Image 1 (tube, rainbow, N blue to C red):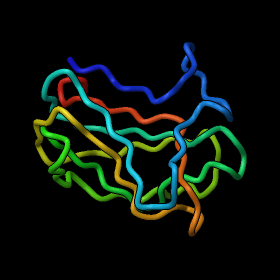
Image 2 (cartoon, one colour; image 1 turned 90 degrees about the horizontal axis):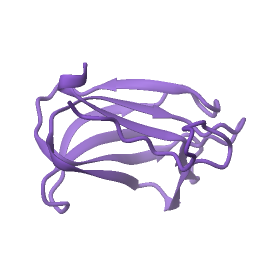
Image 3 (spheres, rainbow, N blue to C red; image 1 turned 135 degrees about the vertical axis):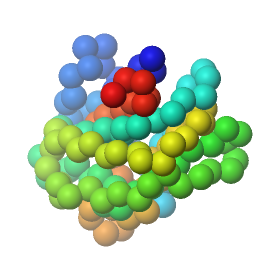
Image 4 (cartoon, rainbow, N blue to C red; image 1 turned 60 degrees about the horizontal axis):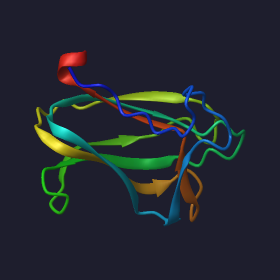
Length: 130
């Protein structure tokens, strides 16, 4: 069974306006996680930062997998449909069977054009978990 990676700095996993990942620059930007062994990811859940009208999520993004951290394979393309809504989650299904040690969210565009992107939580669930 694969446990989810929670992108959150707080120990109680509560999402507040300060607990988030923030890109260093404008898109394209990515956020990756490396598991200790290969995993078949089935579901990815993303939650926006809990800050009204400041949850600049990636508008369009890909979920990608890699075993070496250099070559990335597209597992799906997705769209965030919640605009700037804070503390809002969406679930994305990875239908392509995969077996990678590294996964990333590759942000191609931001909800606000020209803005940096941020995120409250990013969770990966293995196929055995669903």
